Length: 369
Ligand SMILES: *Cc1c(COP(=O)(O)O)cnc(C)c1O
Image 1 (tube, rainbow, N blue to C red):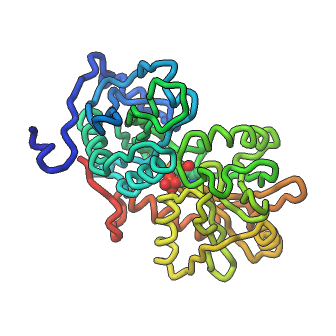
Image 2: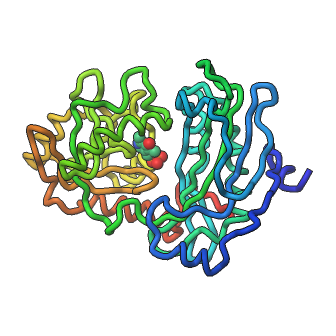
Image 3: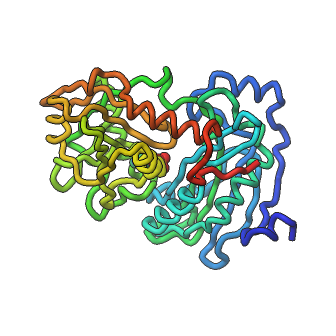
């Protein structure tokens, strides 16, 4: 037993060092002009679960391809769930995570829905610690950059029958990243999708599972072809109520200062950013109302000036102003098409906390190094 194991219920991760890690010069080159999700660090954390033995074989190993049997269940039945969170480098060089336990717990809820085993929160946290112990130099320090962490579970059962897998792998990879939308805080344009839905009652909308995103690509492509950046989905039951974007939650700001966001209804992915934005809006003495918002209310509100700002939020893109919303029968500009005051203030406040420029009054940050 090592001393790291003593302080946690998770066993220690054994280390297999990458024999050919990037040199300092190579890493510096890769950390220049970062885009989102293209570069990866030298190592990855890995655990394996079996129905008989539970979670075990904790290791950190060289980043690279994972050999897999072609009958592995993830390849056939999409038994996959994932998370996304960031490690931020503060001005003093220290490294901090934003509300990581919320991600660990959501990974458990997603896993439950997909009949995958739940990874203990201690193992989730220990896997990040173990990876950053080796790869902390990959946390970039340029403005608006971070080390994006991608934990995920896959069914690796070698069996073509359909069942909850009896073998599952957990991996954690890390990608030094810049802004999700290149080109600064430009408002995005949104196409409201009426022919396809990302989730339905009783479905998997509340789980961060790969299949949801595969299904969103066809409508996303159609929106791109029409010249729009993102898709806004409506509820499958009535096709009239706002749900969310393909990978971000949505908010609307009213002229009277009320801030609206769709209520968590089992179809919507409950964002950690969404939850945090609600607290930051209330901190400004504005009122947040979580309820059903119809497309008609959104559209008319924007047209008559009742709704002055719309923004989307999520870990990858943080807070993104929405400048234009359209569908087959309407096309409206939100406010003057530029980022609104509430949107900009919340974005600033949130990133100030994440990068340690403001005091962490909510206890959201966890120092890892
Ligand atoms: C990940 C995700 C979000 C945002 O969640 P955060 O925890 O804020 O990153 C919102 N919607 C969908 C569909 C997502 O996959």
